[in-house]
Length: 205
Length: 205
DNA sequence: ACCTGAACACCGTTCAAGT
DNA sequence: ACCTGAACACCGTTCAAGT
Image 1 (cartoon, rainbow over the protein chains, first blue to last red):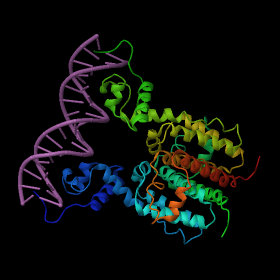
Image 2: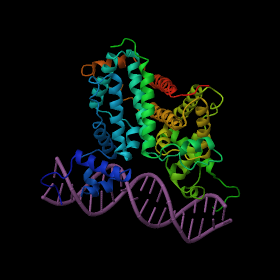
Image 3: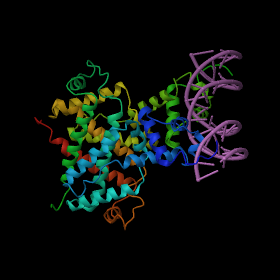
Image 4: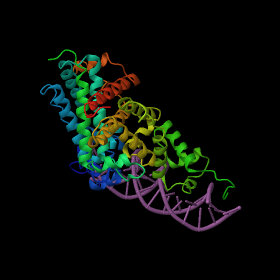
């Protein structure tokens, strides 16, 4: 066939097709990706270095959908909460991508700008400089773990033997399951975390 | 060669060899696993259903190294803290396994017993029944996210442009890196979470 | 029951050939 | 520069053959 007059592919098209496949099946393969783009597997290698780069592109795309504009506009706790919610929402709408995003984090200037804004907002709200990064990391770890909880099968709650584990069974019986269960745990944990973090502030504004 | 007088393999030997390979390389393949067991790849299939079962065995092995004996013996916050620490320690000593453990959780009666003990301890400490599971899930999510933070490359802290992100750069400069950085964030977050969670208790004992 | 070699389908990647 | 078909190494899994 030879070279087309106008290229059939570019990095964006490849990344989006990969994400679509991840959303549908939880993973992607080069042959299927090529098929969905109506192209041969070998063609992809003219645009990306390999599978690893495609994964990086997907991660960057997702990272940029996280809304961090609240820092500097809302009070520190509302800003952290809004950021955490948006972060988790991204995962919630791309369940299959959670595994990808969690293991290898995103490297992107956009993220450094986001962290910079967060650091500034928290320091200005009275958090000591030695603890701001730990605060941000703690919230991010909680969000990541909650995203995993959101997409993983519900082990704690499923198949409980009410004779052998009566206390657990009773608690499970009065607790919601599915998405509401994960949401409850996320909100409870986020509120607790923010409450506890608040006591680290020194000078108040 | 035919059947040996005494079997060369069993599930335990396979799981441990897989874990050793995961610890060394972050992943394992059937051919390499077979090689390390001085056996042909096909032999493994006489003892396990396939790659997926081997992963399950590794997960179960690791889950059983988490110490949950504190529930019912220590005060609720010390018990939760000890459990969280042990949980994270397991991941810390098997960095390559974090990805495995996080995506697909463990199904094991041992874990249900652990959750049962945790539920009992927390209810007895005054937590309302409707929130115990959310409390446990929140702590577990934080631990899982912190484990990912522990093994992932340090994005937030690396390659910061001090002209473009001055506040972030300054904070990075006075913050430890590597394991101490992750430890600081874990302890700060865990303390904050436990502090915040404490306010959910109703009747005290 | 339990090991093996041979075979199969599938994947990621490379490369020479074509425009 | 950018697409393709063919080829390669590698992986997970199956199966008939052997004791």
